Image 1 (cartoon, rainbow, N blue to C red):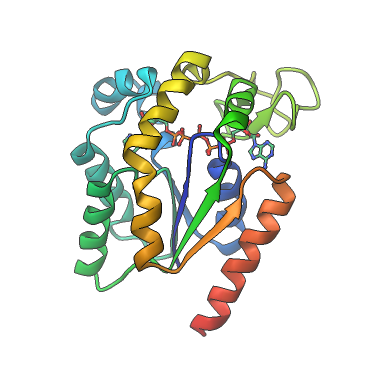
Image 2: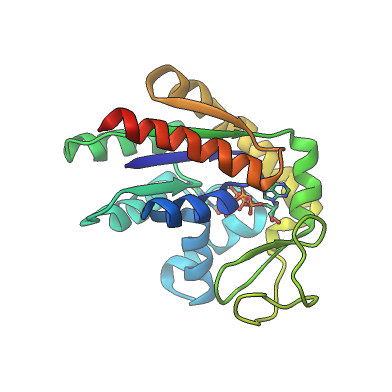
Length: 218
Ligand code: AP5
C-alpha cells in the first residue's frame, strides 16, 4: 500500500503516521524527520537544508525529490509519506517516479485542521531526540516532566515551533501545499478526516478508511 498523508503543520501527521505505519507494516517516510537527522549529524545535506528548516521555508524541490527517491528505491514493502509532497512540482515528480515503476498512490489521507488550534499545539509540542516519540505538554504530557516515557532521554522543543516560525510555516503551507488538496481530490482515492478530534478518534477514522481500501483491493 502506498499512502500520502497530507495536512498543515501540526495537523497530527507525525502522530498518526507512526501509528499507521506500525499497524500496517509500512515504511514511514517523513521528510522533516529525515532532514532533522541530517542536521543533527552535521552532514553536507544537513548543512545545506538547516536554514530552510530554521526559517520555516521549504527546502528546494530537487533536493527533497532526490532524498525521497533514494528512500523509496528498492523498498520491498508499502510506504506512508508524511510531509511529502508539499508542492505541485513534488507531487508531479512523485507521480512520474511511481509510474516509471508501474505503480501509483493508493490512498491520500487529508487531515483537515483549523489553523488557530495549530499554534497552540505546536508551541506546546515536545519530542524525544533519541527515539522520536512525540509529546504535548497540554494534551499528551510525559509521565516524568521533560523525560521521554519510552527511553528516558531529555525531551526537546523544535526550533521551528516558535510562534513567529509557526506563522511563517502556515503561510508557506497556504501558498504552496494547500493547492495539493485540490490536486489529489480530483485524481486520487482521497479521504478527509477532521484532525482537530482527539488522537484516538482520528486514528479510528483513518484505520477504517485504510481497512476498507485494503478490503476493496483484495
Ligand atoms: P515537518 O517536520 O514535516 O513539519 P510540518 O509539516 O510542519 O508538520 P509538523 O511535524 O510540525 O506537524 P505534524 O502534522 O506532524 O503534527 P504532530 O503529529 O507532530 O517539516 C519541517 C520542515 O522541514 C519544513 O518547514 C521544511 O523546511 C522542511 N521540509 C519537510 N518536508 C519538506 C518537503 N517535502 N519539501 C520542502 N521542505 C520540506 O502533532 C503536533 C503536536 O500536536 C504534537 O505535540 C502532538 O502530540 C499534538 N497532537 C497531534 N494530534 C493531536 C490531536 N488529535 N489532538 C491533540 N493534540 C494532538
